[in-house]
Length: 448
View (tube, rainbow, N blue to C red):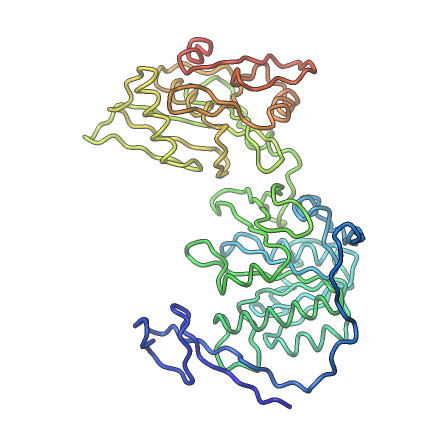
């Protein structure tokens, strides 16, 4: 049996040391040395009898991966149809955003044998949360509060669950390493063992990952390369809506999103987000415009609010919520230079309602409409919506998947949609009126 060999590596520059030091002698960084395994203690095994050989890609047979359907249609959409057997899914997000709530709801409502491993909460704490989430609970949901990855895998092999949930990967530790849980080496080693177990037994595993203050999943970046699916659960904790996005998916598209609403009973799926995100107004107000955007392949309507007022202090303020502030400055510069609107001495505040953050360039036209509406104190008609990108010369550029955007606006009962005249209009007829515009000046005249 080979002896277990470890070494210490600087996480900043990669220098190797035989023993731990407080400071790296190469780069001078403090407390960056972490223990990693060089060679594991293992018995000699005979070489694999199955020999691999080169094969032409045309001869490779493809089989559709068997999937487990979850009780959440939004999660199924993001995963590409369900959880693939033997896959490892990593879900990350800010503290308190609802990661554990989402996975506990799955464990309680799915009719499968599920092992819920928690290194952060006791069994009584999980039970209290389960009682709050639902009255009907899965009799095949089993809890295991443990942080040793060897014990977790040992119990999972005996139990043979259909699905395993680990909350969270940063709390686990391996007995092969002396470093504390949460270090780079511990996260890498524990992830390796869990992925190996998932592939050998064909058991899907969902890992919860903490994130750093920069919004990245804590631990080595290689963790995201090792797993099959990386999901990001984000949203503003001051608002009710949560977005589930796939940053990586080996078994489906990364362009789909799932939308949830946080209520007292947990997370509720939003089937039609456009109806929820748009405020029902009793009177027309200036500064409001409706944008038709795409989140992945999913069209939805967002309400853009703008407030333009004379700057009280010397320097005009520019403030955005849910929109890129640098893009707002660019749009204001285009309005002033190309269309002649004097906005340089005015405060401009912009907000996307519902706490939604998006970077779709098709919002530009709605942003321009809301700013002009507030500046002239003239309300945009309630049943008008917008989808177009603004160029630096003041032209209105086409946006992708325009037919899906028009269909969504038509479905929600809007009367008119403003788009670029360069977009190829579909041949089929729509009940909604399509207004094609080419320049900001042209757009301003037709709107007001």
